[in-house]
Image (tube, rainbow, N blue to C red):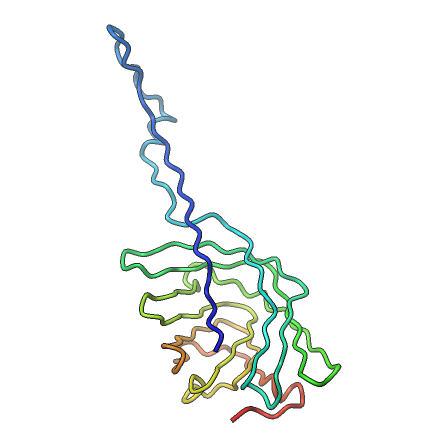
Length: 194
């Protein structure tokens, strides 16, 4: 299974304010703006950066391989690391995906621009677990044994808030079930892989 590795970018700005300490000259009192700046803390979040998505081919979801390309990809992400070393990821922007079953000229296009902000941010845990959370529309997949016990199709188009904890690429727990789930293998006229 191809494991997705998200680049982590950390960008912190630190502002140092110094009062002049000339020989014999008294230090200048801090102004309101300087006082406020010295009390503010740098954001724990990295800057928003584009995160282009490479084309992917899924094997083992439907009865044939399915290629995913992204004709519109204007997603940006930012990251922060918690005290335990886990990485929280927020995403926003527009993303459109086209699915093409192997051996066909058929194309199926979906707008999957659901953001992952605030309470819906994604978390990459140090132990290898990954919490996928999003709102709006998403394409979700379950490779190998991760589909077992979820009640979800292997390849799904969803609408509405969703939260899934993927554990070590062998198990998945659906924490928040989206309001709409479409089996994309069936939608494309394909069987589902065993």
